[in-house]
Length: 337
Image 1 (tube, rainbow, N blue to C red):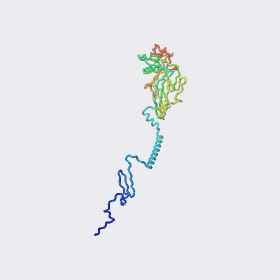
Image 2: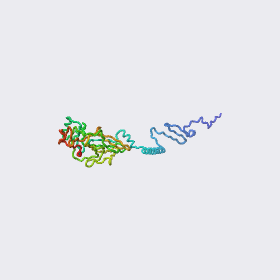
Image 3: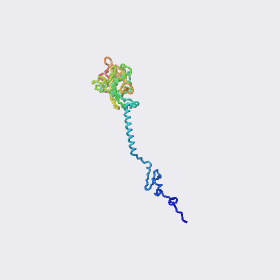
Image 4: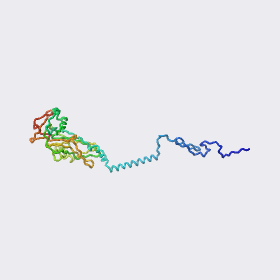
């Protein structure tokens, strides 16, 4: 019996082909996944493998992405610069900053010191009949006591007034972004002018010298106006008529001021008037929180000193008690008075 011939077209009994076998065109062009998300493409003659970048590797920017980022940066810079220009036109930046600074500190930093110019005496007077205690008596008895700051401070702390003249060193410092322009400095009286004190005198008269000062006030005048000082120390023209004091931020200016009286006893403080931008402001200056005190010598018609108690200088510049103040001169403050 003849055996049945197997069909060549039947593939049921053929062995399985391996993937990628060129005899199986139906498998060509297919992809299969690899670990890490890469894909493998299989074909008749080549194999292409795309490996995934390792974790944490820096990203590579394409040319188009770089150009796009640069364009955004340029446009943003132009926009912000234009916005800043508009803000500067609409808002006074310096003034706005000063509004913040002004809430935490003064427009002007000031310091004031009592000074004795070369031609000034150091006499002091009290309204009462004063008897020094043992400590003050010992201090007055020391040679050179008249120039000792300890004696000066002690007498002032006890309420003694400067006699004849009082000089001050006033230092001003601008503390704003805008310029501070001082328009006026003037004493402000506290209460009425009164007669010179006639209780106790500590007589330390002036010396001959040529003082240096910037501004002078005649405290007996009707209007207390700052004046220039003439070469001989007398009152000149109004100071702020042709002078000004300008204080840029952190810049300082120092003014030596003399006040004097020949007729009265007065108590006062200083007032500074100044301009910031378009606004006029003022601030008041005191002597360590207290007012300044000044009195004229109490002299009679014969130009003799008249006090109920008096102390005068010895040759070594210590002080001693005197029985009659009339034996003293009637010159105090500085020689011109």
